[in-house]
Image 1 (tube, rainbow, N blue to C red):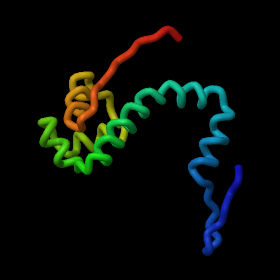
Image 2 (cartoon, rainbow, N blue to C red; image 1 turned 60 degrees about the horizontal axis):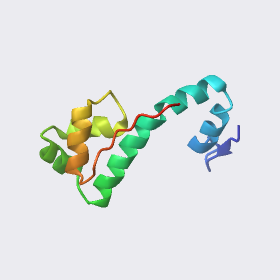
Image 3 (spheres, rainbow, N blue to C red; image 1 turned 45 degrees about the vertical axis):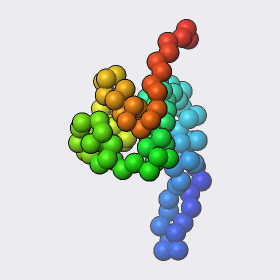
Image 4 (cartoon, helix red, strand yellow; image 1 turned 90 degrees about the vertical axis):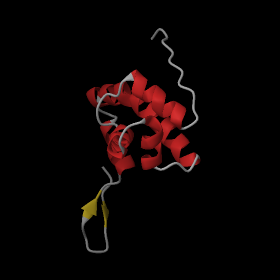
Length: 103
């Protein structure tokens, strides 16, 4: 792993370097890839919210929930329902499409 040093001499590693190293482990890679669809969905909705200049509070008002529920969703914590994801998607002007395909 490539460690770097701050001006004060504190060693650290960047997230991208850490992730690159971890991806060499087959178990880590499998777990990481299993979570990818969830985080891709969260990222798409977050990007749409930011692109439209909508705050978490405004989005919460549109969805009929709390700002903290939006923050939890955007952080990837929990397992939101399809209904919640659909309401959030609509509130940011996006259309939710669910597709199931063979692996």
